[in-house]
Image (cartoon, rainbow, N blue to C red):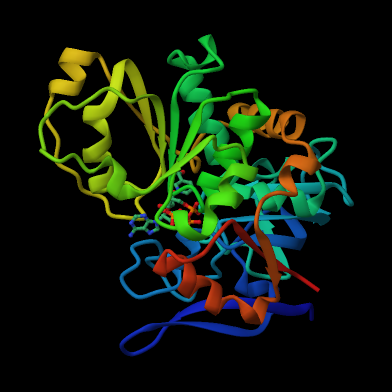
Length: 333
Ligand SMILES: NC(=O)c1ccc[n+]([C@@H]2O[C@H](COP(=O)([O-])OP(=O)(O)OC[C@H]3O[C@@H](n4cnc5c(N)ncnc54)[C@H](OP(=O)(O)O)[C@@H]3O)[C@@H](O)[C@H]2O)c1
């Protein structure tokens, strides 16, 4: 019988615990393709999936891991050959379908994207769901005017996080020059954020107005927000006429209060970003773009660490506490 190691989120009497243990193929969700996992990113959503009331997993036990890269070792699909290097993100991975925190993953072949040329198994997961989400946000902003000028004033929030760091990297790689990073870690991460392409670094306090009102001084043309909550409420009144904000995340909460004035007086666009259920065609286009635009040299600036399957827990704690920087990958040995 094939056995391998995996990390399970298991429901205990009063809590959810991560349990590192031996698994069998019967523990994996159904799919026509078996992948030997090389790397899986630890994302904010994985952190939420690993705790009680995180709102991600409904049925336990579950193997978390919303993304992975690896090599096909068996498949019934005519679309993929054994030995193909692949990556997967989203769909039900790590939520309703056993995910990447496992030495083996079994998924439908159509979930798998053959690794684009120039992208290693490791770099594909340094990018991972975070890089895909950053690419989708930039793509949507470009469809709403960003493409027209390389010196538009762009703000990226939650800038030391996975999506934030990779949004800065991709924006810089695409030639955008006027990028502000918003980070609670400005004191310690200033140099890091500048190395990713930020020309200025500000703190959340810098965008809190002296006097709260529905409209403020116009400061940014385009915003990529990974934080949600009150940050969005503070940003909407300072987006310039015709500008756009792409909402990706909820690290600071899911609710915010605003008025219609930024929308009806300044024509501001509020753009939603989802990376989970996008079409396969858009996924492939975004991965081709990431592979073409973000060189290994640019990616080398991303703060990263690798841990073993049994060592994920402290990383999850730091993601939930908002103290994590960049990307941490689980490396399967
Ligand atoms: N829409 C999608 O498909 C999609 C895909 C991927 C991720 N997401 C979401 O996007 C967000 C970022 O994901 P990620 O993987 O990049 O997470 P991450 O690495 O944890 O980054 C989040 C960043 O937000 C800031 N932050 C954290 N807690 C905060 C708080 N309480 N108040 C204000 N700022 C806070 C921190 O940056 P600073 O310390 O630098 O401020 C942190 O590094 C998450 O909410 C995630 O669920 C959505």
